[in-house]
Amino acid sequence: MDLTAWLAVVVIALAVAGVIRGLDVRLVLFLAALVLGGLAGDLAPIVRQFVATFSDGKFVVPICSAMGFAYVLKYTGCDQHLVRILVEPVRRVRFLMVPGVVLVGFVVNVPVISQTSTAVCLGTVVVPVMRAAGFSPLAIGAALLLGASVGGELLNPGAPELLTVSSLTKVPTTGMWQQILPLVLPVLAVSTLVLWGMTAWGERGDPHRKESGTGTGRGTGAGTGEEQQAGFVPLPVPDEPLNPLKALVPLVPLALLFVTGPPLELVSIPQRWAVVRPPEAPSAAVAGPAAAHALEAKKDPVFSSRLIGLAMLVGVGVAALAVPSKAKGCARVFFEGAGYGFTHIVSLIVTASCFGKGIEQVGLADHLGDLIAASPGLLQPLAGVVPCAFAFVSGSGMASTQSLYGFFYYPAVELSQDPVEVGAMVSVGSAAGRTMSPVAAVTLMCATLTGAKPFDLVRRVGPPLVAGLAAAIALRVMGVV
Image (tube, rainbow, N blue to C red; front, side, top):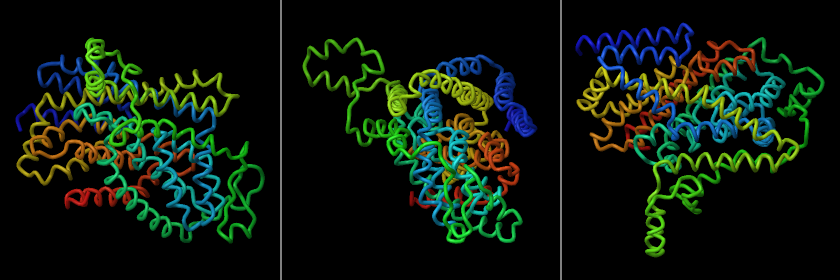
């Protein structure tokens, strides 16, 4: 490497140190991007990248609408009804509670793409239940953290990581589950099993095991001695009876996206609902049904991302109908959530994109490409490990995927490997790194909800996640997935 490349490595190391010391990730990434652009002798690409990503509808529309929908779910309480249905079987057998909570968190994270929101939604029900069952704060927090952040959101077409992959591959996010699922499931299965074993071992002789198991009163989650000895733990007393229809509301946008998108495409949504019809539309209509059908089949590049936004709006409407007493506030809450999504998610994508552009300018991406070209077998392992390390430091899976996916996309194309599969590996690695990061928002939230220390949670979930990611990489290298 030349002097510029070595100086760039120093800048990246300083950026990492700044994040570790608690500086704002967005500020650090953007300042580092400017310095890297300066080293390359041209700041214009950094500025262009900032402006382009800041106003890119492929990110803004799906992410902001998805977060708005998540806020509406919380406002109407529909997310709580889904959690209560999922937790009901788990509470009946204490031995299965840890893996059950992880699986429930994974499922809830699919419609609620924010890991922090998932942790809050799940923790409201799960924390009292697990306390009543005698689990320590560390055990509760670790199960909550792993379930809320291990990668459930990657099965949602509105996930920011998938939008990053789609922006380069031009493959709709609704068609990526075939590449994502075979990687997410091994990580989920292996990490859950390892955490289950570690929890069983760690809880032996723990003085906190039986705390809060004798409380009484509304909402404590405590039960009688006979119930606890039988392994049956009552749910906290809810404010209203369980409503299965409300529990289905979080799944409405997902169902719409999967039936309208590839590979199912059971229902066709006319493009005019999301994009302006092209100038040739009238002439195609005059030419006949065949020409009109061919034009409609030629999707506008922004249609798929706007379709995600439409699906979320439908979900908001259904939530308002399901809870009429809250209908008048749904619009306000939706836009509050959209604002949160722009502030905390889109902003990270913007600055991470600038950081990635800076790394590209100084030539570090070329060096990585040369390494992969010389040793093609390193493509998949590096696509999992490098984003994992970046997400561990930054606390953001989105920033990691946005910054680094391009570095693996081009080598994958040159090696004739499916870039979507590589994008799936980058996304899964980023999710693992975020989950074991002590500065991740979801880690800090789980610590707050349970009273455990963030670094203790990281030490508990770290080995399971490393084992899960290693299993996924091994399966991919062997060609199993």
